[in-house]
Amino acid sequence: MLKEIEAKISELEAQLRELDGEPQEAVTEFRRNQLRRDIRELLKECRHLTPADRVYLARHAGRPGTKNFIDALFEDFFELRGDRQGKEDASILCGIARFHGQPVTVIGHRKGTSLEENLRYNFGMPGPEGYRKALRVMRQAEKFDRPVITFIDTPGAYPGLEAEAHGQGEAIARNLAEMSALKVPVISVVTGEGNSGGALAIGVANTVMMLENAVYSILSPEGFASILWKDASRSNEACDLMKLTAQDLKQYGVVDEIIPEPLGGAHRNPSAVYQALDTALDAALTHLRRQNGAALAAHRYRKFRTMGSAFQMLPKEGF
Image (cartoon, rainbow, N blue to C red):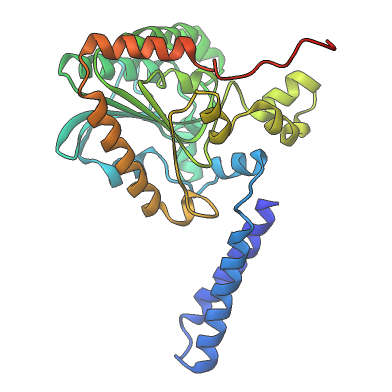
C-alpha cells in the first residue's frame, strides 16, 4: 500500500515542481495549493503502517545513511581505515569526531546511494575485515575514554565464501564478546534495517535506539519466509510474525528509545530526524557519562542477559 501512496505523492510533487517555472498568477497559485493539499492528504494515510510498510521505508533508497548522520550530527569527523590484518572494508565507516564538543568514536554500516557506491560498499554487507576494523576502533575509544556511537543499517554480514574463509563468524563473535566488556558508554542507533549478527556485531550497547520506521531482526523477511515456508514471496506475512518493528521491540525491551520520523519516512524531512536524534543522543550520553567503566560494562551485560524478558509466552494449553 505504502509503495502505491508514495508513487502518487511523487507524481504530485513532480507537477508541483513544474509549476515553479510558471508565472506567479492566481490560477497557478491555486493549483499549487491544491497539489500541496493533496500531498498532505496522502501523507495522512501513512499514519498506520504495516510491518511490511516499515520494511519498505527502512530500505528506501533516499533514506539517510551513516554518512548523512555523521555530517549532520558531528563535527571534525576523521575517518579511520583498515583492520591492520588484511584490508580495508568500506562497508563499515569508522572515525573520531566531536559531538557537542565532546570527542566520540563513530562506527556505522555504509550502503551507498548509487549503483557504483552500492558495489563499492558491498550493499552494506561487511566482511570480517570490516568488523575487525570496527573492533580496532572501539579498543582505541576505550583506551582514550571516548564514548562509542554506532549506526546500524545492513541486510546482514556478507555470506560469501571468501568472507567465511577469512573468519566471518569468529570476527562477529569476538565483537560481541569485546563490546559487552567495553568500559566506555556505547550507544547504538538502528537507522534502517538491522539484520542478523551483521547488525548485532556493532550493536551491543548500553542504550539502543531505533528510528520509527527502522527494523531489527534475526534475518530478512525474505530469508525467514524461505526457511519457514520455502517461499520467499510470503515475506509480507513474515513481517507480521517476526515482530521486527521499533514499536514491537520497544515493548519487548530490546530497544530503549524510538526516534520519531515525519509522515512518509525519514527521507521526506531528514533535518527533523537529525534534530530529534541529536537531542536523544545528547541526553543518553549525559546520563551514561555519570557511570564509571565497570558499571557501564555490567549494565551492558545485564541488559543483554535480560533482553526480551518482557515478552509474554503463549499459554501451553492446547499445544
